[in-house]
Amino acid sequence: MNQLPTRVDAVVVGAGLAGLAAARQIKSRGRSVIVIEAQDGVGGRVRTDKVDGFLLDRGFQVLLTAYPELKTQIDMSALDLKMFSSGALVMRDGKPSVVTDPFREPKRAAATVFAPIGSLTDKLRVAALRWRVMHRNEDKILNSADISTVVALRGLGFSTKMIDRFFRPLFGGIQLDPELRTSRRMFEIIFKYLSEGQSALPTNGMSAIPEQMAKHLGAENIFLNTRVTNIEPGFVSTANARIETKAVVVATDQPSASELLRTTEITSRVAGCVYFSADTPPTHEKFVVLDGTGQGPVLNAAVLSNIAPSYAPPGKHLIVAALPGIITGDLEAMSRDQLRTWWGPQVDSWSHIKTYRITHAGPEQLPPFDPKQKVSLGNGMFVCGDHRDTGSIQGALYSGRRCGEAVLASLA
Image (cartoon, rainbow, N blue to C red; front, side, top):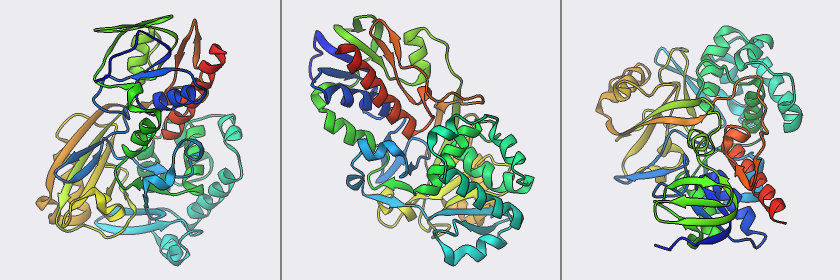
């Protein structure tokens, strides 16, 4: 293990996406920078565990290929992305209904029209909403009048059936918000990215993203299994070292950042996630599977091995069940009970692999939502993370990059 330096231009606390993005930006201008991480690997919330040949992302996560920061910070071809089908499979009363983007999958447009998730008017309104967000840039969306997602959807004329059977399980899952209280600005940004790009999984799991970033930064600049005990202008302390620095960047999750910086904590979204192994997949589709009842607790699921066969060993299939907002109780039993109503008794033969209870899955972003919080706190102290921008991989990467730029400006 490398020894911590006694002096460096910048110290980044936290090796999640934001911290790695900030550090790479600082290093790109020839400044010395190190990243200190308490965990045993990089990625923060974007980590993948390998269990008996399965790849288990820590929470059901997907990469939206339309995220703008991916073009500047990530070598997308190296991720060897595997794509979900555009649309979703909605389950209700044990029956699947295919809902696709007719602009991408015209052969299934008729099935979408007759899917029992809402009226034809509802579906025409989805098309109108898609057109509108695709023809507005991010700045206009993020500076528009703000209300909650559910109030916005009702205002656009969507029926309760459409909201409960489509928007709630899809966007409630993406934003970890079954009640759809999240800012309309955030909802429209995600809808825009879904419409413009695809949902994907890296062949080697979501951790391939931060691992690629860390490789470019250099292992000699990253110190794992090292907890920061104190920060102050000009210094960062660990249990065994005190580092003099011109800039301190706090890039931990928001609760840890508020503790280190002694600032107000933002409410965190919580999420449960259960992984199962099966010999036979319950569906061969590559869609995200949505709960069409509006009741949950599993809002969405997927057979991940259909999308990326590398997620499961040969002859096995990997199913993930996402329970946004729920981390207490017997999540495995709750998931089986619901998935049994979708796919019958075969669910009882599945093997439980692992359950995740994620206490900080993302920041709560209620209206009015201001997406661009300051990253420079003065006196050489900086902070970044998706809680400073949008609660997403895009937000983490963008926050880290602009924080790195702010550090460089202060060092000039």
